[in-house]
Image 1 (tube, rainbow, N blue to C red):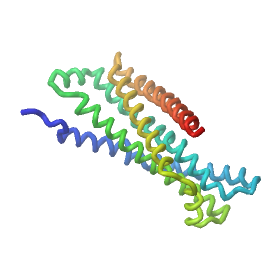
Image 2: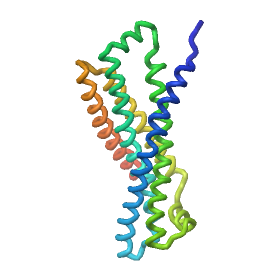
Image 3: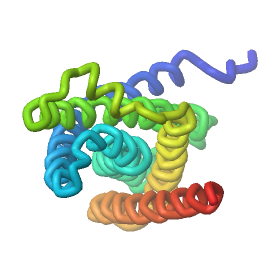
Image 4: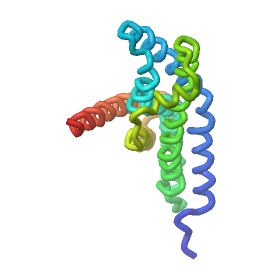
Length: 231
């Protein structure tokens, strides 16, 4: 009997990975994005006060978070938590020859291990990016409400003034690209691990460093192309 393309075990692995890389990272992302929103709002409020443009703080916060910081901040958390963990897990399986044993038994490694992880990354990183934007705006509102006396309605209206759906899609698109790049790096480093048990730590470190550099470079390229297309 032919095996189903999406077996129950694959779905189970996917949900476990999604829970690990997304839900369990929520407290860390919340704290970081809230603090980022607070700090940026404080700095912008102080600098724009010199130009009597404090009312532009919510709009600038939206642009900074949505276009740049939220995708990068979320990707950094994912890389530190999930890319390192995935690379180390695969490296350990490779060194212990568990992967060779699975292949000998006819287990499709891509379907049962790699694809669920890739799907979890591709789903949860964009979701958590939206979450990061929202929490960052909450942090910014806490500052604006105290220093500028803004109400929730005033803050939301000014933050979303001139906002377009393409802004949100750009942020989600960046996060999706980052998730694919990070997952591929984790797979590559983990599956090509060599040496003894001490190699697991080196693989995890190499995966994190490579993923961070790659994500930063990709973000710069995307931003550059975006600016060129607007001219």
